[in-house]
Image (tube, rainbow, N blue to C red):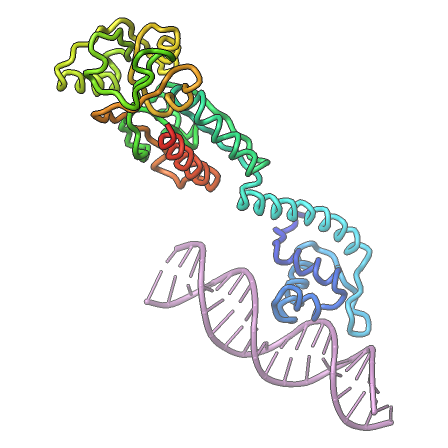
Length: 302
DNA sequence: GGTTCTCGTTCCGAAAATCA
DNA sequence: TGATTTTCGGAACGAGAACC
């Protein structure tokens, strides 16, 4: 004979009566009326198919079967307590996971710095960091493989929201000890004739850089193209030439090259990318705040 | 929109426990 | 010992959700 389905509320009432010894006190602990508890107990007895309480002199006395059942209920409630605790930890961001993807320009220095601080503030959060092209970063966020992306290019995608970070202006880097390293800021005219290192033509940043020099009527001596901004830093550090790079990479390159402000401003925008079709997890939302703060601080100090 | 079901309420009475 | 309090549970009913 199949036992009909037990209900959580009936189990709660049973547990409350076992713990508080009377139906009235059980009802108080559950914040319901006493008859409601009596009815829940009666329903539970009907469903389990045996008597849980002997009515002795108007009082309830648990049967042996009730005591056995109570042991099992207590074990289950330990599990419920753990679920409650886990929910509290998730709400308080002391437990959970965060999957971050970034363009190389941010995945090698900025994001590790933000993540290290974030993990320190939120111990218990498991974090993974992937470095990919901007297109792949957006794909991973769109498909739900990553919670947050940070790209150095605008990649339109119907399944993602992009937030442009402010004040991202390129910096000029020159070898340490270079004649231009003593200057406070540089312009296209200062770089006339200098060996120049830049991104490939397919990059948005390359087009923006080229436009400034065309508008200034300055012809550069373009010697090397490189995909990664960190590679450009290495080339400049090895005196292969000078370059314009994004402010984040520039900020972390100050030990290796001289970083100079450049006018007119060449914008190189960064974007925080999140999934548009589902709510941003609490942890990811807090991480986005940390990224905004760190990004703003890094580009302001360089 | 009407019906049914679930879960809760208040009201009330019966029985036992407590107290002066 | 009688009055009062406590406890349990039945009856009636309401609110809200689910279903047709």
